[in-house]
Length: 272
Image (cartoon, rainbow, N blue to C red; front, side):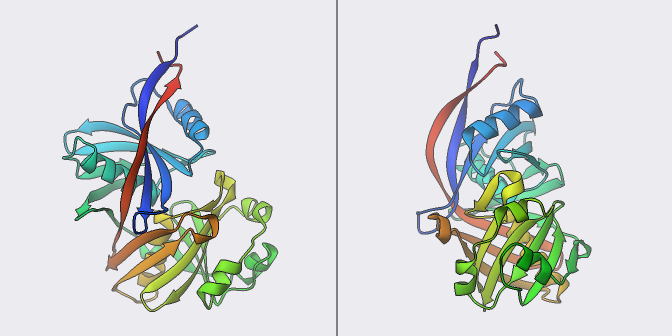
């Protein structure tokens, strides 16, 4: 029998709000001997909405793989922001690019906040009547809707106010079978109240979703807002208040947030 090998996993909270809440993330920097199936198993055992595995290929770049408890994600904002914070604050630093399955993402720090910056394709946005989609899942019809390829398809449903967003109780089985992840939100000037549901990926409700923030910026660009910024609050309904700082100009989107390091765990696998 092959003995188990222990490797460290930094447990972060990403997109914290005033030091509280945030979205838990596992960051594994030692990927020697791990294949995608093993990574998926580690992510399932950890049980966080996502776990990111970081492999240095060059002095200033790292290749990453991102997993929910159930599936691999080609792109996800909260793991990329969390990995950025870990690289700069926990070491070794010096990395300016993360390579995920969708391509290269620029990274850095703005004061104490980590950020990622990516170029988007506005053609990936499609305005859509999502009234039937919403009512089938037990939610009222939205005032506006979009489908966005991230590349996984996201359904974005805009509601009239934050109270409506907070009151939603969607049918998770219906959403899981829809073939789409779901963001619901309300906007008041530069503030957004959001929720995100991804039951098919093993995450019924996510506390903070960076990729959905990018998708929201893509809808704004597609609708003619060539530049802007929003503060997105998410996670209250599940006890993890979170905050994402979103900005965009032309075809470039940036998301940023504060992070906290909770602990370092030793995880075991059978690669020893």
